[in-house]
Structure formats: C-alpha cells, structure tokens
Picture 1 (spheres, rainbow, N blue to C red):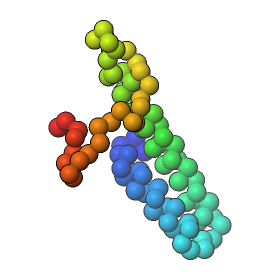
Picture 2: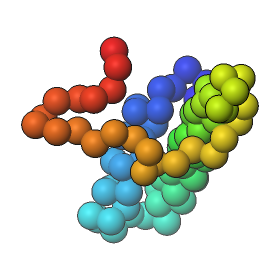
Picture 3: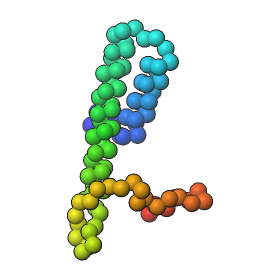
Length: 88
C-alpha cells in the first residue's frame, strides 16, 4: 500500500462502501472487503495526519521563524467566481 496514492485509496474505499451497502455479500467476501476498507481507512487517515503536520511546520510565526501552529481550515481563502485562489 506504500505506493498507493491518497486519491486512489479513497476512491477504492468509496467503492468498497458502495459494494457493501448495495448488495448482500457472502460472509467471507464481506469480511474481506471490510478488512480491506479498514486498511484503506487507516492509510488515508495517516496520509491526512502527515499533511497536517507538514502544514503545521510550514506556518510561520510573527518573528518569521518556522514554528508549528495548529491548522485552521477557516483561514483558507474562499474561492470566488469559479477561480482557484491557491498559488500554483
């Protein structure tokens, strides 16, 4: 799973959830899908935690030194007129 990308893992996890919700699965197949879903969920949560740590490290304090600060989603600029406000 180390070479799996976050988006791929999330897409697979969503597919597993849909499969488990949409039809009756034999117990063994359902358990395999559940186990795979748990692994994918842990992978995705780990990647999100890594991203949050990177954001904390990159935030600068008032003195201009790198210092960890908690990530605050409300501080992200909002997108207007369909244009992305993130830098390239």
